[in-house]
Image: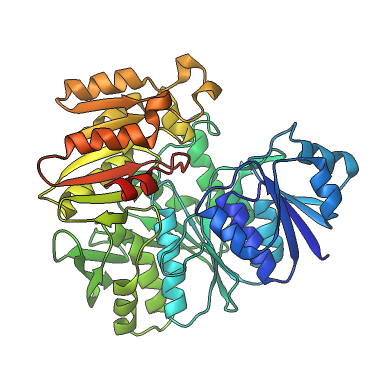
Amino acid sequence: MKKIYLIGICGSGMSALAGLLKEKGFEVGGSDRACFPPIKDEIEKLDLKLYKDFSEKNIKDFKPDLVIIGNIVGRGNPEGEFVLNKGYEFLSMPEALRYFFLKERERIVVAGTHGKTTTASLLAYSLEKGGFDPGFFIGGVPVNFGKNYRLGNGNFFVVEGDEYETSFFDKYSKFFHYFPKILILKPLEYDHVDIFSSEEEYMKAFKFLLREIPSEGKAFFPSSSKKAMSLRHFSFSKNITYGKNKNDDIFYKLKSKGFPYVFEVFIHNKSLGEFKLNLIGEYNIENALPSIYLLYENGVKIEKIKETLASFKGVKRRQEILFDSKKVTLIDDFAHHPTAIEKTIKSVKRSFPDKRIITIFEPASWSLRKKIFQKELANSLMKSDLVYILGIKGKEKIKEKERLNLNKLKNDLNNYGKKAFIFEGDKSKSFFVLKRIKEDIKEGDWVILIVSNSTRLNLDIDLREGL
């Protein structure tokens, strides 16, 4: 097998898989309808055959030995139909990841609703600095690495385990294909309402994931999450709790408020001393605890662990500071759930106590585009001083009666005493948003916080250039 073709190559996971395949020596090609920065930049670096738009002619031209079908590809896609009709060998992205890269590696999977990307990134970086030369496959881009994948030659392979469906021919969660030796479970909260019909169905996926861990493996549980802790009895492996509770196997005590954080760490009530973390948000301390535990358990010296944590630069689009002046700070965040939005705004307030906050909110994830979180969104956004509400991404794909009501969201915020503005249609373009910002920040110092898991507006670039 020499040539592999990826349908939907410009997704974050598919582009990372393409990079891994190139590193392993395969000739790689693929197609997509749209490719935006930063993925576009990464694809261009790979120097692979990229076809713009989907057509069976692309596959005829490339002549692949294997086709990998991304989960954005549905029935009716011309390339997907061609693969099925002509009998090509094909795999889903998670199947390909396991088949080519996870066999004979010690798989560490990070799964849950909140904090997966940062936790996985910090773990991969920690293992690298600890001398373990890990492989990794992560949904975001760790700043220290500059890319979201790495083949590595060591025993460990870190995977961000997504609970979203695998493909049109496999409706189970992606993480079921990874079979972790070590699972780091993050806080759990009902999400992906387009895939899971109820909270019970959502939680069931994580119950079954715990069943995959071997008895000699490990499962980490965050004590801050009642839902995650409630699943401990489904595990047959060694359970390790982490958080702020003194009864946890690894816990911390905060020594300084605000950014950067200084905190003392305890493993089985033994103090490892004080650590420093240069990330916004106290919950990132919780994200760091499994890394500290695994490094300590594997014999890395405490001073080396402290040095590693202090040098971690975070993840692109996870509370990433894009622009900072005396008057304005611009922060980009990928929050895709009301709880994550609320935590982000609170963390920004603590880190910049003398500045007011404008939150630019775009309903882009499936969960936020629907009205299921209508009330929760208003409650989370009210922590901001001003709110700009952008139009719903792809709103025509959602029935009006099921869709988030932007006017109601605006009115609810107004009732809380908060100013809110809606930017829909042509008015959602960066020019109009920037014009409004310049009017609102004439007096005082401000943080402008972009909350969206979409890149369609390139708003961060336009604001950096315009402020």
